Image 1 (cartoon, helix red, strand yellow):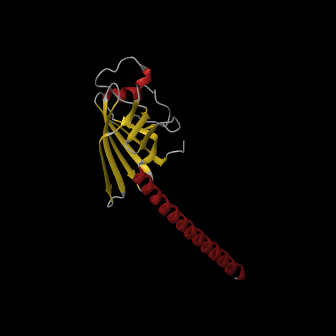
Image 2 (tube, rainbow, N blue to C red):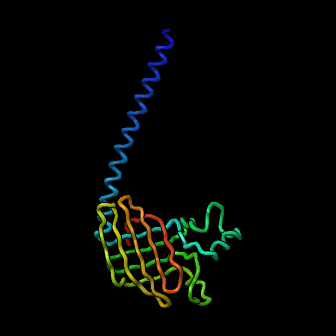
Image 3 (tube, rainbow, N blue to C red):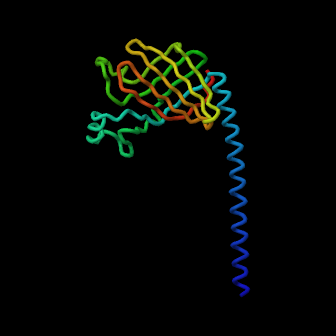
Length: 190
Protein backbone atom coordinates (compact mmCIF):
# COMPACT_ATOMS: atom_id res chain seq x y z
CA UNK A 1 0.00 0.00 0.00
CA UNK A 2 2.80 2.39 0.94
CA UNK A 3 4.63 1.51 -2.30
CA UNK A 4 1.56 2.38 -4.39
CA UNK A 5 1.13 5.81 -2.73
CA UNK A 6 4.81 6.60 -3.43
CA UNK A 7 4.24 5.76 -7.10
CA UNK A 8 1.27 8.14 -7.24
CA UNK A 9 3.36 10.86 -5.62
CA UNK A 10 6.23 10.38 -8.10
CA UNK A 11 3.83 10.38 -11.07
CA UNK A 12 2.08 13.48 -9.73
CA UNK A 13 5.36 15.37 -9.35
CA UNK A 14 6.47 14.29 -12.85
CA UNK A 15 3.16 15.45 -14.33
CA UNK A 16 3.45 18.77 -12.50
CA UNK A 17 6.99 19.31 -13.83
CA UNK A 18 5.91 18.47 -17.40
CA UNK A 19 3.03 20.96 -17.23
CA UNK A 20 5.30 23.60 -15.68
CA UNK A 21 7.99 23.15 -18.37
CA UNK A 22 5.47 23.22 -21.21
CA UNK A 23 4.03 26.50 -19.91
CA UNK A 24 7.52 28.03 -19.70
CA UNK A 25 8.19 26.99 -23.27
CA UNK A 26 4.99 28.54 -24.54
CA UNK A 27 5.80 31.86 -22.87
CA UNK A 28 9.23 31.80 -24.51
CA UNK A 29 7.62 31.02 -27.85
CA UNK A 30 5.14 33.87 -27.49
CA UNK A 31 7.98 36.28 -26.59
CA UNK A 32 9.96 35.11 -29.63
CA UNK A 33 6.85 35.40 -31.78
CA UNK A 34 6.20 38.98 -30.68
CA UNK A 35 9.85 39.83 -31.41
CA UNK A 36 9.58 38.28 -34.90
CA UNK A 37 6.34 40.16 -35.57
CA UNK A 38 7.92 43.50 -34.73
CA UNK A 39 11.01 42.46 -36.73
CA UNK A 40 8.91 41.71 -39.81
CA UNK A 41 7.08 45.03 -39.43
CA UNK A 42 10.37 46.96 -39.31
CA UNK A 43 11.76 45.08 -42.35
CA UNK A 44 8.63 45.82 -44.35
CA UNK A 45 8.51 49.48 -43.27
CA UNK A 46 12.15 49.96 -44.27
CA UNK A 47 11.72 48.02 -47.55
CA UNK A 48 15.06 46.42 -46.84
CA UNK A 49 14.87 42.62 -46.83
CA UNK A 50 15.84 39.46 -48.66
CA UNK A 51 13.56 36.54 -49.44
CA UNK A 52 15.42 33.22 -49.30
CA UNK A 53 13.54 30.55 -51.23
CA UNK A 54 13.62 26.98 -49.95
CA UNK A 55 11.02 25.43 -52.24
CA UNK A 56 9.77 25.95 -55.77
CA UNK A 57 6.17 25.18 -56.63
CA UNK A 58 5.87 25.06 -60.43
CA UNK A 59 2.62 24.82 -62.33
CA UNK A 60 1.93 21.15 -62.97
CA UNK A 61 1.43 20.49 -66.68
CA UNK A 62 1.53 17.31 -68.74
CA UNK A 63 5.15 18.05 -69.70
CA UNK A 64 6.12 18.51 -66.05
CA UNK A 65 4.36 15.24 -65.24
CA UNK A 66 6.45 13.52 -67.94
CA UNK A 67 9.64 14.84 -66.31
CA UNK A 68 8.43 13.60 -62.91
CA UNK A 69 7.65 10.17 -64.37
CA UNK A 70 11.16 9.91 -65.81
CA UNK A 71 12.63 10.08 -62.25
CA UNK A 72 14.84 13.11 -62.97
CA UNK A 73 13.95 14.77 -59.67
CA UNK A 74 15.80 13.79 -56.49
CA UNK A 75 14.05 11.59 -53.91
CA UNK A 76 11.58 13.42 -51.70
CA UNK A 77 10.78 15.96 -54.40
CA UNK A 78 7.63 15.92 -56.45
CA UNK A 79 6.83 17.81 -59.62
CA UNK A 80 4.65 20.26 -57.75
CA UNK A 81 7.14 20.95 -54.90
CA UNK A 82 10.88 21.02 -55.47
CA UNK A 83 13.35 21.47 -52.62
CA UNK A 84 15.77 24.30 -53.52
CA UNK A 85 17.10 25.10 -50.04
CA UNK A 86 20.80 25.79 -49.93
CA UNK A 87 21.26 26.88 -53.54
CA UNK A 88 21.22 30.65 -52.90
CA UNK A 89 17.84 31.45 -54.45
CA UNK A 90 16.79 34.97 -53.45
CA UNK A 91 14.72 38.05 -54.10
CA UNK A 92 16.06 41.30 -52.58
CA UNK A 93 14.05 44.44 -51.90
CA UNK A 94 15.96 47.64 -51.14
CA UNK A 95 13.77 50.77 -51.14
CA UNK A 96 12.52 50.94 -54.75
CA UNK A 97 15.10 48.55 -56.23
CA UNK A 98 14.52 44.80 -56.62
CA UNK A 99 16.78 41.96 -57.70
CA UNK A 100 16.24 38.23 -57.97
CA UNK A 101 17.99 35.03 -58.93
CA UNK A 102 15.51 32.16 -58.71
CA UNK A 103 15.64 28.79 -60.50
CA UNK A 104 12.84 28.04 -62.92
CA UNK A 105 11.07 24.71 -63.31
CA UNK A 106 8.33 24.60 -65.88
CA UNK A 107 7.52 25.31 -69.50
CA UNK A 108 8.46 28.24 -71.67
CA UNK A 109 5.71 29.54 -73.91
CA UNK A 110 8.13 31.39 -76.18
CA UNK A 111 11.64 30.19 -76.98
CA UNK A 112 14.36 31.72 -74.87
CA UNK A 113 17.46 30.72 -76.81
CA UNK A 114 20.27 28.40 -75.89
CA UNK A 115 21.91 30.48 -73.18
CA UNK A 116 21.88 28.36 -70.00
CA UNK A 117 22.98 31.36 -67.94
CA UNK A 118 19.56 32.98 -68.17
CA UNK A 119 17.37 29.90 -67.74
CA UNK A 120 16.26 30.97 -64.25
CA UNK A 121 14.29 34.03 -63.25
CA UNK A 122 16.82 36.85 -63.01
CA UNK A 123 16.20 40.56 -62.84
CA UNK A 124 17.66 43.66 -61.26
CA UNK A 125 16.35 47.20 -61.37
CA UNK A 126 13.67 49.59 -60.25
CA UNK A 127 10.22 48.07 -59.85
CA UNK A 128 7.35 49.48 -61.92
CA UNK A 129 3.81 49.79 -60.53
CA UNK A 130 4.84 48.95 -56.94
CA UNK A 131 1.77 48.29 -54.78
CA UNK A 132 1.85 47.44 -51.10
CA UNK A 133 -1.03 46.47 -48.81
CA UNK A 134 -1.25 45.35 -45.22
CA UNK A 135 -3.96 42.78 -44.51
CA UNK A 136 -4.34 43.07 -40.73
CA UNK A 137 -7.21 40.60 -40.67
CA UNK A 138 -5.08 37.80 -42.14
CA UNK A 139 -1.83 39.05 -40.60
CA UNK A 140 0.17 39.54 -43.78
CA UNK A 141 1.67 42.08 -46.13
CA UNK A 142 1.16 41.86 -49.87
CA UNK A 143 3.30 43.45 -52.57
CA UNK A 144 3.09 43.33 -56.31
CA UNK A 145 5.18 44.96 -58.98
CA UNK A 146 6.35 44.66 -62.56
CA UNK A 147 9.95 44.48 -63.72
CA UNK A 148 11.82 43.64 -66.95
CA UNK A 149 15.12 42.11 -67.85
CA UNK A 150 16.70 42.06 -71.34
CA UNK A 151 14.46 39.23 -72.56
CA UNK A 152 11.11 39.24 -70.76
CA UNK A 153 8.85 41.05 -68.32
CA UNK A 154 7.69 39.75 -64.96
CA UNK A 155 4.71 40.37 -62.70
CA UNK A 156 5.73 39.53 -59.11
CA UNK A 157 3.41 38.98 -56.14
CA UNK A 158 4.88 38.69 -52.64
CA UNK A 159 2.97 37.69 -49.49
CA UNK A 160 4.83 38.08 -46.19
CA UNK A 161 3.31 36.66 -43.03
CA UNK A 162 3.88 37.88 -39.47
CA UNK A 163 6.03 34.80 -38.73
CA UNK A 164 8.52 35.84 -41.43
CA UNK A 165 7.49 33.11 -43.85
CA UNK A 166 6.76 34.34 -47.34
CA UNK A 167 5.45 33.29 -50.72
CA UNK A 168 6.54 34.74 -54.06
CA UNK A 169 4.67 34.15 -57.30
CA UNK A 170 6.26 35.12 -60.61
CA UNK A 171 4.29 35.39 -63.83
CA UNK A 172 6.42 35.86 -66.93
CA UNK A 173 5.66 37.05 -70.42
CA UNK A 174 7.30 33.90 -71.80
CA UNK A 175 6.79 31.14 -69.21
CA UNK A 176 4.15 29.47 -67.12
CA UNK A 177 3.81 30.94 -63.59
CA UNK A 178 5.80 29.57 -60.68
CA UNK A 179 5.56 30.09 -56.93
CA UNK A 180 8.31 29.97 -54.29
CA UNK A 181 8.12 29.45 -50.54
CA UNK A 182 10.66 30.65 -48.00
CA UNK A 183 11.40 33.26 -45.37
CA UNK A 184 12.41 36.91 -45.28
CA UNK A 185 15.40 38.21 -43.37
CA UNK A 186 17.15 41.53 -42.99
CA UNK A 187 19.70 42.29 -45.66
CA UNK A 188 23.26 41.66 -44.45
CA UNK A 189 25.31 44.80 -43.89
CA UNK A 190 27.61 45.52 -46.81
